[in-house]
Length: 162
Image (tube, rainbow, N blue to C red):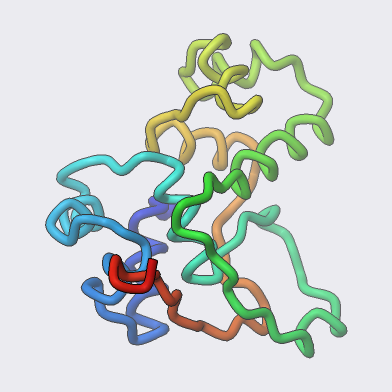
């Protein structure tokens, strides 16, 4: 299993975007972001989901194969840096529903408190990235680039513009 942070770092390299640009666009502290990518510190899961949207990453089953019509679509990132993103949370919740396994069994497999997992799935709290990675592994999900994604910078309002 490749950790989420490694997939994010690889995607940044693929797109040729600087960490400085990402931090400016998403309102992240560059030093904190760099230490997240190297694994020296965590990152709030909402920020990770914001990064996923910004970089055109999505969660799919490991055996996912795009339909031929998917590759012709061009999707531009439309990321509101102030919004809370739930892309990964929604995909995890959908996969749990598909598998029809008891939540307590999934929580135990991921070594997560069941109440914490339930609160995460309903959007009431976050989970640390290591628990999310375990959930993705247990649910046979992976992080992949979206087909036809076209990177676009976010225009943030400066104080003068407001």
